[in-house]
Amino acid sequence: MSQKGVYYLAIVASVICAMGIFTYGVHINSKDDAVRGGAIPVLVSFLLLFLRRNYSEQSFDALRNAEPGIASKLDSFESSQTVPSFTDEETGKLLMAILSRLNIEANERKVQDGALFVASVIGTIMLAFGDYFFKLIRG
Image: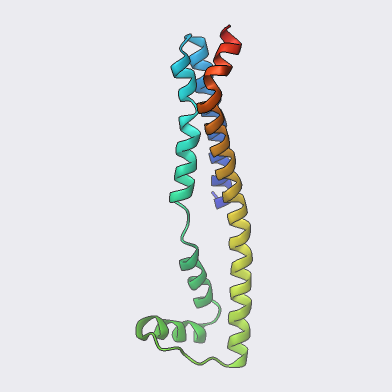
C-alpha cells in the first residue's frame, strides 16, 4: 500500500472508531464509553506524527541512485566526510534529483499533515464534546 493509502486509511479508521465507539456508548447508555471514542483518533494522530518516514534518508538514497559515478562519490563522502568534486553534468543530475525528491516529499507531507489534522480534530471534538453529543441523543 502506498504512503498516501496509509494516511487515508488512518483517517477512515479514526472516523469509524470514533463514531463506532460513540454509538456503542450511546447504545449501552454510558456517557463515559461514548466519549472514549475520541481517544482512538488522538492515538492515530500520535502514531502518524511519531512513526513518519525518514525523509532525509530517502533523499540521500535518491541522490545515490541518480547515477553510479555519483553514488561512489557520495559513499566516499559518507565514510570520510570530505566533500567530493562533481562535474557540471553530475551537478545538474544531483540538482534535478534533489528538486524531484523535494517535490515528492512535499506532496507526501501535505497528505500526512492533512491526515494528522483530521485525526486530531475528530479526537479532540469527541473528547471535548462527546458528553454534550451524548446528552443531545439520550436526552
